[in-house]
Length: 483
Image: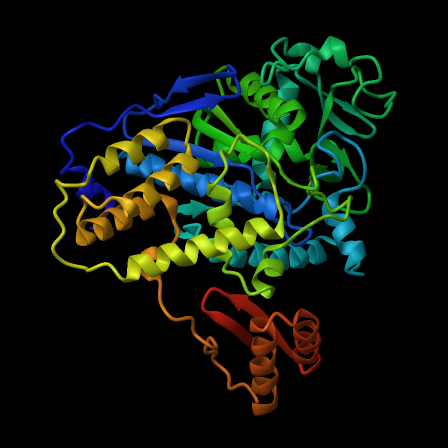
């Protein structure tokens, strides 16, 4: 039985949803622009490399948010962007384009075709990872920035015509001085930052906080009214939101690192172009840290989902661990934390599988759904919602069959896949037969991995790769495909 059928049997109405809105800095009651539909945009990955678990936290947060909104009866139009050019190595206009850096690391020539190939590879990796984390991808639109070049050019032209943009030899820039409300998201004090501004000195820029809308490049890019080049990173989000969701949306999410620059730039672009409030509710998740430091490829302290799977833990254990902390709180990653989450998840799965499937009396829920809903309504307090689940399991006044029905209902929001729990497949079938010698390598590696002999497992993975096959660890088991 699903959430909606269960909710209809509840006597008490759902409490109002309340979220911390970065725009006001306050916890606000959620009132959508439309009574029934919620338009939501989530900042997605830049497709130049494998996404680390910090990026995965953002994806799971967006998934939980959409599930909660659906639990409250809303229809959600969800968009997650895929950046495949234009994102410089900082949120401001500094450094190299991350996609260009990715091509150099892959020893691929710097061409648009190669950039698309690189993006294809890492897009599929990202999809595989979020699938493993039980993010419902079928309900999300994933636009690629390079597919919306005309829309970005049109938006830049509009800003130029309205007097918000100016052309230089280096490209086209947004004139921040023309938008007095710049910095309103997060209460950014521009005067306090003016001394030693956030960007390197650029003599063609009128002001230190002006940002690039179109970057000139004689070798790489697209033709435009100004010169050959490519749009800046910030303009892609605004243009795609306008195209896919409209000039005003309900919710925009992203990591807290996007508040000072990227998201304030989005607001400046959108509201200058439309004359309307761009986003009603801004929600930001905090960082994942390791030893108290933010996960960063530049610091060399990255952890990826495949690292967790290779050590024999379920990818859903990472999702469970994410849910044990509030999305607005930093969470310090440790392997002990993963072990604890994996252990708790397996306990919950075993307990669920032992519960009977018939005879539930949903009127006798011991107040579970009211408490569970209150936790979600309180700024998406998933840690408290999880604690409510464990309280339910210890409640002797709720029948086992009712507990199972309640867990199924709660899991439609939590997304732990309890109803799909079952034996793990040894090997996912593929369209082509796997040679016996490769199959043996796969079996030996699985035995090494299960036995936590990770050095041997890595050696066998390399042997499988040398034999011309790609190995992917999935929730259903290892999947082998010819290269």
